[in-house]
Length: 69
Image 1 (cartoon, rainbow, N blue to C red):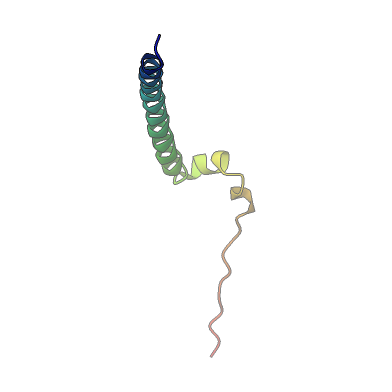
Image 2: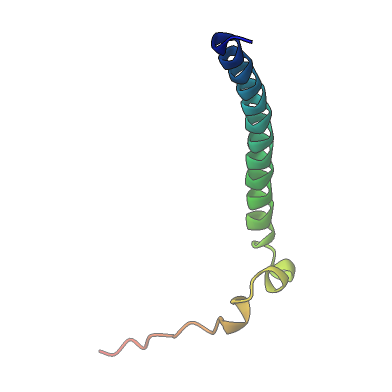
C-alpha cells in the first residue's frame, strides 16, 4: 500500500469510530439529563427526599425572629 492509501484508510476508520463514540456519548448525556430531572423532581416529594438526600437529616427548624420594639 502507498502512504496516501494508508492515511485514507486510517482516516476512514477514525471517522467511523468517532461517529460511533459521539453517538454513545450523546445517548449517555441525554440519559444523565433525564436522570437529573427525575431526581430533582423526586426531591420535591417529602417521602423520597429522606431516601435520596443524606443532608436532609441535618435540616432543622427555622429560627423565628422576635420583633422587638
